[in-house]
Length: 394
Ligand SMILES: *Cc1c(COP(=O)(O)O)cnc(C)c1O
Image 1 (cartoon, rainbow, N blue to C red):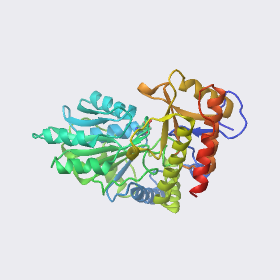
Image 2: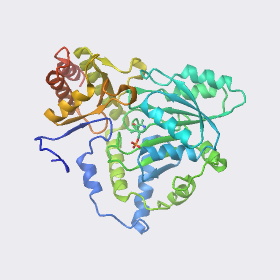
Image 3: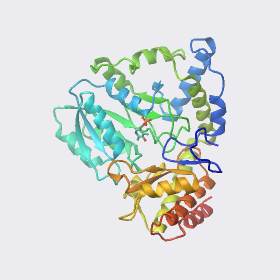
Image 4: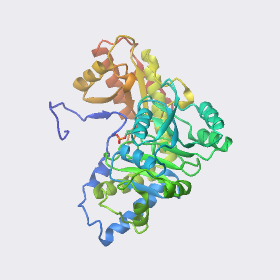
């Protein structure tokens, strides 16, 4: 049973929002251990171990800073450690999360140049290339991209963004939000030359909310020496200094670090490539179900289809929020709401984190029964189409 339920519904709750994702029992058991002295001798061993393991998940040999905060905190840390008031940042408006990051930058005193999209694909690399080529004075100090746009289900191609920056011979930093992408879709901090990677605990890492991350390149560290935005809690410098011995400058989220240690073990035991293939397969099965129902996937560019979640557009005149309410009430399943301009127009199916074939079939069956219960016109059999795909692609 859930810790807090206003009305008892039998059976396990399906938490199919695209984060927080379901926390596996093995991680819950790890978090359940007694809190330890974060200045004591054992903590340094744990700290060093977990800091090394998280580097393998980001595919980096550079420092990964861990904050006791939600992903939004790590967004702020990425900006305030590298930039100064009045600096220009080129941001790609791929959806609601990119929009929120841009708003935050504005509040911090950063000038943002927007590369817009129609929210139905990932970042527009050609437009980024054009903007950088036109910036001969190198006024743009950073390019900021959301890797997996959780509001639309579009994954941007970060290696191509990197190439555009290099081809323009532009010195801008590359800042990437992979809060919902990390550990669900391939990500390579070092190989892709990302300067700051932002992530969080409650999505692909299968943890509760409360940890967030900055993976930091040498170039970003150098930029931080001259960056003039005020920072204290988010300052990388004391973090990286204390992390050298496995400790933190202020109290870390001790029990979440136990969970992170176990989450990394689980991901590495399965093998990251197997994890990514699992999500790709579930995403394909989900899209087949959606198309069979006669509905549209929000992302229109197959190169940008997200393995993490699928955003589904409802037929004109039907309420996605009413559908979600019906599904919650009848089948005890939470689906993601449409964000920003997609509010009530679309809903989101999360297939990230600790997720297998049977969870997917339960999820899609719940959606299909919900479509019927809510009177949304659709062609029955989408769940069957997904089942056929899964059976033929073990
Ligand atoms: C979830 C999410 C965020 C926000 O993270 P919080 O943990 O809610 O602060 C930002 N960006 C993306 C892409 C996300 O998926």
